[in-house]
Image (tube, rainbow, N blue to C red):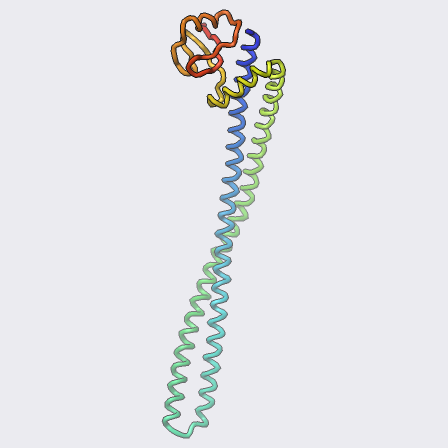
Length: 236
């Protein structure tokens, strides 16, 4: 029985190490996701700027069509003035030409504003594109570094899993089931050390008779408070 208790202690040490390694590995995967999310965010920002430029280009095109229409209307009105017979008609056409020219001037101003906005955004896009290219390179380098760390952690996991399999092969199925059940119930801690009459797993006082029976080491004894398997550890 003492040998089995030693094996259980070793098993818990391995399982706690495995827990730590798996948590570390999950953390590394989380870091990779964070890195890639940062890259995706930069790509989305760049795509948003490009979409805005495309929208401004469409708006500029619509304004240019409207300007061309006003300019054509002005030319027609000016040509029609040569055929006018009365002063009233001449004044009416003159007002139309003035209004059309005013509208054309406003359209030209709007077109210039769109051109300025487009040029500004294109400059920002060029800068963002250069930054994105650098970020993509850095992201890939960091990603490869994290993958290398994950691979190294995985080697440790596989080595510990091999050690675990070797130990569990020599433990009775019922005892292993009990151990695994306690691990789930007690946050990974199925084994607790007993010292000076106390369970160090829950810090509760152990009944004297139960504590004394630990010295014999001829049975699997559980803490009556936390149900963990007790292993005697005396002060050295």
